[in-house]
Amino acid sequence: MHKKNNYIKIFFFISFFLFFSAPLGHSVSENNDGSLSKSIMEIAIELKCLECEGQNVYESNSNFSQSIKAYISKELTRGTDSRDIINDLHQKYGDEILMTPPVQTNTYILWILPFFLLSLGFFIFFYKLKK
Image (cartoon, rainbow, N blue to C red; front, side, top):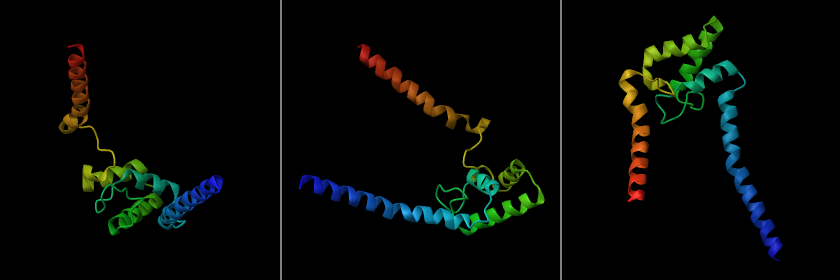
């Protein structure tokens, strides 16, 4: 009887996992549409959707993302390099469109502050530990 309950639990766990993972695979194939080539996908992953919260252009289905994907496709068919496309969009929309913000003089504190605070925390911890 005990083994039967374990098999039932395993069955429900696997069913639950498959049920909730199926829509994820479906949305990726919807977004892919068979026409989104590998180079378009690679560029779209590096760009942030400005309408969505934390999604890249490839994952989003917003109007903004659709227009950016169309722009990328058009530029790639013209023969434009992927770095040039990203740089052009960066000039149009600013740092907000990049998934990884560039390290600049005005953002040094944002890059250094977490490491500084972590080091300070370790220093205080070990100082208190010695007392």
